[in-house]
Amino acid sequence: MYKLISSLLFLFDAEVIHEFSTKLIKNFSLIPFSSFIIKKCYQVSDKSLEKELFGIKFKNPVGLAAGFDKNAEYYNEFSNFGFGFIEIGTVTPMPQPGNPKKRIFRLVENKSMINRLGFNNKGLEEIANNLKKERDIIVGANIGKNFFTDNEEGYKDYLKCLSGLHDYVDYFAVNISSPNTKDLRELHNKDLLKPLLQKLMEYNQRKDKRKPILLKISPDLTNNQLNDIISIVLDLKIDGVIATNTSISREGVTSVYKNEEGGLSGKLLNKKSNNIIRYLRKNLDKDFPIIGVGGIMDPEDAIEKINCGADLIQLYTGFIYQGPSLIKKINKLLLK
Image (cartoon, rainbow, N blue to C red):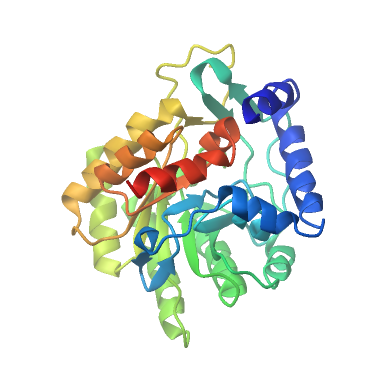
């Protein structure tokens, strides 16, 4: 059924369909008993799926990656599909429109996508307000800086997001790895990254209840860059790493959109993401938390990513191509 529906939806602009679909799901959930029916169809409940990391108990290891619910408007509705956690954002202090449209491209023949959204979001104040709703799902906030903020001043934007959302989310993901905000990836440089993370950790320690802080990294890093990051996260006691964001590589792309600027996600990202996860797991403590994301298109991809060293996983492009049944299939396979 989803294959038929998606073939029709894919005839239209990806961003238009995303907005249409999320609003449709929201409105459908208002129908009496609809949420109950969706949960019955997709959720898998089993104690053996539970995972505890950085003091948080996840009901299953399958999460929704940042970028799908940018403004924290749909996390309760998406939780009905069986996700163990939802990551909202990326959130910036001030609202911003992102990059000019058209900015999302489906590479159907490659089961991948290219996006150059550019942290489009409604800003910290509105998103914080959206997070005040009751929920029974773990929600993390992916935070970034506004496009007009220089990297040297970037820590101020991250601090604003950390402080403004601290009471409303369960963990934070520090996004320094989107390829769609000018010069953002320069923050991987140890001379910029360490003071940024240090300021966030210092603020966090002053709170009565600290929240886990994770670092979301690029798949395009060299081993030397990874070594620097490993050294920093261990030195500052960062709670975990999310590996990885989208790639600027076009290896394997055969689509007519191969020359479009932006980050590559989906099947063609899988190998690069897995290589990063393997390297991290090899060079970090066996208990250091890693969330694996990038190219999970079927249940077997999810198992592979976990075998590479991921404790939790996140879906984005696979959720678009395969639909909500993918979450259930992954959890079912994990139980075998």
